[in-house]
Amino acid sequence: MGTDENSHTIYRGRLITLCREPVQLPGGNRLELDIVHHPGGAVIVPLRGDGQVCLLWQYRYAVGGEIWEVPAGCIDPADGTPLQAARRELQEETGLTAASWLELGALWPSPGFCDERLVLYLARDLTQSRPTVEADELIEVRWLPLLQALTMAADGRISDAKSVAALFRARTVLDNEH
Image (cartoon, rainbow, N blue to C red; front, side):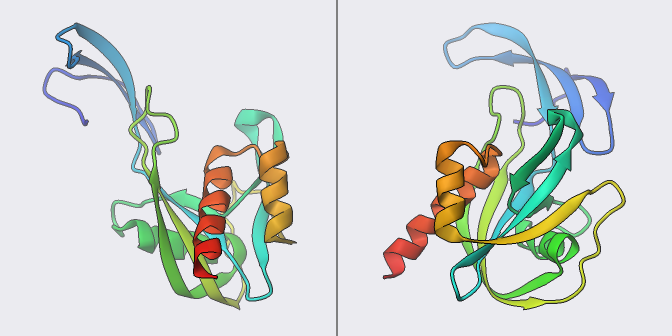
């Protein structure tokens, strides 16, 4: 993981860096791979005591329209940890703060070409304030019963991979609490 002195940067943007990297695979084969380097992110399932989960109906240019997502955002190297990113993104996108945080593990969304690692959280004991949505974010905050969100994730209405994974991991934790 990561770049070395033989890596060639093809593109460096605000969020990602694309590099062509010489690699030797475990079987001994040598080749060059194009790898997207990403700072990683935090994914949050905000859950109220009444079983309602906060979802975002968000416009995504890359997929040509609106999709359902849970709150999420990038880790800022300046502020450090995935939990700090989760707290920041939850407040910015939804206006929520949480007194209780439980890590649900991590995942690699596209490990064939990208080193992005997402850390998933369940956020509870929520307090509402005013969101501070960024100019490039078109978001509607909506509350749905967790079971309805899980049905939407299972039948494809929620098609964002990080959201699907986070919702099902949250359900597993909640099922094990009872």
